[in-house]
Image (cartoon, rainbow, N blue to C red; front, side):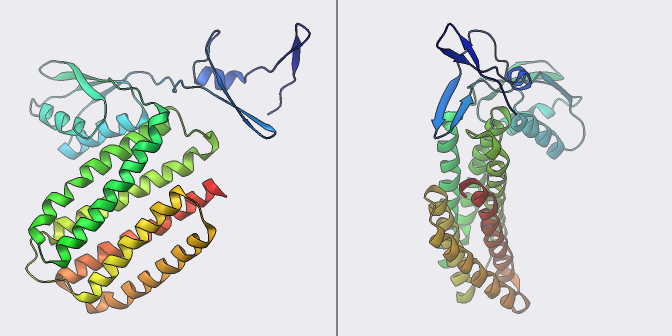
Length: 301
C-alpha cells in the first residue's frame, strides 16, 4: 500500500489513512493516534477496538452447547449479548459460563431471557500480563501435579485440576483482546493467537491427567515419573525462551522434545492402567509444547 506525502502550511507533511482501516477501527476527526518510530518504519496504531455489533443468541441443546455459545461470543469480542431460552434452569448454566469470563456480567434478566454486557475494557496493555499469568498457572499445575503423583497423593489432584478453569479464563481473555484489537504488531496477531490456543490445550491435558489419576490406587512407575519431570522442564524451558529469545536454547528445546517423545513411543506398548493414562497425557503435553515453537519463531525471527 502506498500513499503520497502532502505538504501543508509550508512545513507540515501529511499522509492520509487507508479508509478501510479507519472505518474498521472507527477513527474520526479529533481522535488520537500513536506513532512508533522503528528505523525506516513508522507504525501507526489506535487504542480503539473493532466495533462489533450487539449479538443475540437463542440457546437450545445440551448444557455444553449453551456454555460454548457464550464463550465463543466472549472470545470474538461481542460487547453486549442478548440471550433467549426456554428452560428456566438455563440461567444456572449461563451463570456458570460467566464464571470463566473476565468482565462479562448479566445486566438485566427476565424469566426466559437475559442480557450480558462487557463491563471491563479489553485494554491491550494488559495482554502481556494476562498471558504471563496463563503460563505461570500452567507451570504451577505441572509442578504441583508431579509432586502429588510422585508421592502417590492422588486425592490432591482434583483441586489441582480446577486450576485449568483459571487457565481458560486467562486464555479466553487473551483471545478476546486479540479479536477486538489485535496484537501490538498487527501482522503477528494470528501467530500469537496460535500460542494462546496451544496454552489452553496444554492446560487441558494437565487437567485431564489430574482427573483421570485422582482415584488411582497404584503408584506411577519411576520411568513414567522421569518423563513427567522432563516434560514439565520442557514447558518451563519454552516459557523462558518465550520471554527471552536465545537461538541456542531453542535448539536444545527441540532436541529435548525429540528425546522425550522417543521415550514415550517406546513405553506406550508396555504400559497399562494409571501408567498408560499418565503417559498419554505427558506425550500430548510434550507435543503441544513443541507446537508452540512454530508460531513463536514466526514472531521473533
